[in-house]
Image (cartoon, rainbow, N blue to C red; front, side, top):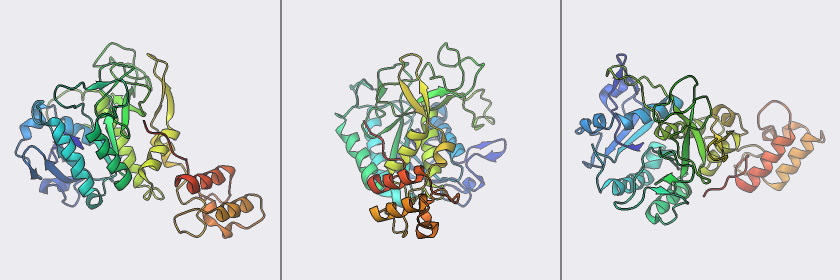
Length: 366
């Protein structure tokens, strides 16, 4: 979680938000927070600047709690890059955080980086109307994480009400940009005047033709503020992004999906998402549906000899089973969902595994 910090010892209702073990600090048994790096102080597992997080409205802790609610069995790593106010080093610290993830991804099992921030170099525009390929430093780091570490970088699209632009770093090619929808009806949106109902693109959310996904951004309830006397939890694309980061962590923890590539994990979310039309522009985007993504076929579909790949011969065997010319025992994995039958869908999935190492094929990245 690249953000304002993560108060791992926060309590709500008398319970530690991220698990009882967090009383002892990150990395303790029964604590979902595995590690915390403070890029302002250069210290690990450091709570020397807790006021930063409170002055920022517990932003980093809140988005972390959302991801944790989506994937409660996953671990969290907090990477504090912002202080109590914006400064000229914010962008550099984001770059440092991405480098840190590349170095420690294997150690902590990191599969997604959440950036619910808009940050650019001082003097440069934060909003971009096209994929920002000119952001060479960000592009290189996102590509390294994607290609070398199988880690997806997820970023909030921004809350400027634009339908033709995203913020940095959401605009960076390879970043999974996330806009917001409402997840309830019969309430007054907090950031603008609108009629709210589930799966309506939120009036505050930025979208653009190159936006990748939508996720709930209002109203989101984590319960983390109940001991602080604060009413409501806010809203924004900052809340939408960790729904996607949590979904990625959940999928990579589901049986059969642990070995997915970053590209395949993204394909599961994009191809199973519910299509939502942005009423402001007419553009359509997939809103994540974690249950549907989790129900997709595993990457082992069609892998008859369990060697991690699918050959043309194995596809032929799967077809023979489909046509009742061979028993299922000649290729048990042809039956990807284990229901006792081989279907056309499973044959197509096996072909996609052979061609793309993913049963759903791949999706383009801006």
